[in-house]
Length: 73
Image: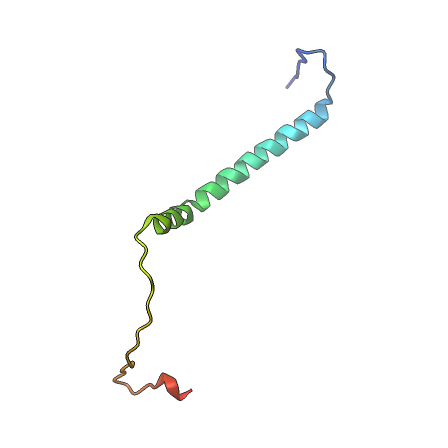
């Protein structure tokens, strides 16, 4: 690949190639992260836009036919 300078500004060709490679790697990494976190983003948005209902604590005793008593610990 040959780079042609159309302006009178001087540049370091190796530095430019290094910056282009870094930018391409950055773009690819962002693309991978975007793909792998798409479901998480959708869940966060759905939760944010859903109807908000306050969570409440059940005030009744828990019945267990097996006989496990969580208060015995």
